[in-house]
Amino acid sequence: MKPFKIFLQAITTALLVLTCFFAQAQDIKVVYHVNTDINTASAILGNVRNHLNADPKAKITVVTHGPGIDFLLEGAKDSKGREFSGMVSDLAGKGVQFRVCNNTLTTRNIDASKVSMEAKIVPSGVAEVARLQAKEGFVYLKP
Amino acid sequence: MKPFKIFLQAITTALLVLTCFFAQAQDIKVVYHVNTDINTASAILGNVRNHLNADPKAKITVVTHGPGIDFLLEGAKDSKGREFSGMVSDLAGKGVQFRVCNNTLTTRNIDASKVSMEAKIVPSGVAEVARLQAKEGFVYLKP
Amino acid sequence: MKPFKIFLQAITTALLVLTCFFAQAQDIKVVYHVNTDINTASAILGNVRNHLNADPKAKITVVTHGPGIDFLLEGAKDSKGREFSGMVSDLAGKGVQFRVCNNTLTTRNIDASKVSMEAKIVPSGVAEVARLQAKEGFVYLKP
Image (tube, rainbow over all chains, first blue to last red; front, side, top):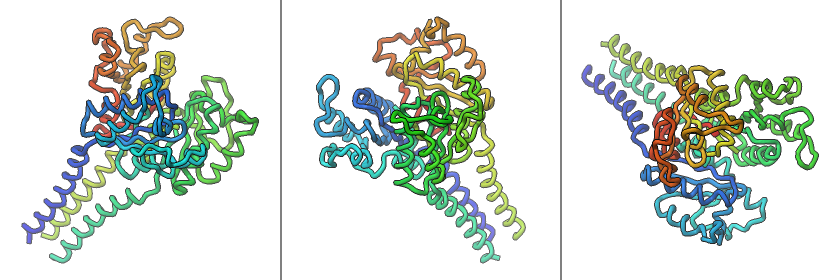
């Protein structure tokens, strides 16, 4: 029986060690919280791109609300007249997720059909930012 | 003895599982970090209200310092001339806590008696923002 | 055998309790994320100083990118014409660490030799902000 007990203890300890190990080994998950206007969007998308270049395994979710959603609306262009959709698609292709706050759509009377196909609509941007951190192990970054 | 051993192992495992479960099941705690001026306060309080609508069990603490404390001073009004006290009391009634940085009061020569009854004064706003995250399990949000 | 089993169980439980205890007892580690221009730097360094006054054991790392790096460049002065180097050295002497984003240096064509001796250059500011939180137990603060 003693060997069995020791075996069980070993399993328990191993599980604890593995838990710590996996926490360390896991890919980093980051929520980018964006509520600033469209003039800040190019720099923010540049930050996301640089982040992925430095850490290609990072899982990045960009949560937008308020004026922050504008670069994810149909036909949105940067100050040089280029559509944001190219950069957004490019990042989405690298695994970046985009979220748009439904409260913002309602308040600003914007139809859901105007939102980029790459973005998912969530009920509340701020609640999503908190949920990703508290329940999904994301860390926070306000660009 | 073997059944007893298995029982103890089961307890240990159950405790681990429960720990994980409770971490998942726990209500989300969020610190809103506010150091922007009074023109941003209405939108920020709107964010807090929307957050609670989306997640009524969220525990929200608003920590203010620098220009961020202004909406929590006696008689503070928004751009439409409405006192902030109504909205602040309303949110406080829903469990939202407000904190004001004492360093800011000292630097700006503001008497503690000018601070809203709904707010609690803390020695340092930034240290409180860090403490809530590191010691009390709060996640962060900069509105 | 029973006492030995109980002993092992006690060890396991003690380890769990100790883990929780150490998490609580550990000094707070905070990453200050700075990407705003040099006009905000005095207030930010003031925040860091106030933070340390309130919590002298806090370990603070200031990660800068974009316009946020400017106060860490050689000869940088505040609006009153005082060099930032004095305040930076003072804080470094109290254990504060400063990091400058290499992507920013490259994009802005700034030679590494222009960066303050007190600062360490990291490949990516945003990736460093995420890494410190996800892998080193830092909490986040955007001043």
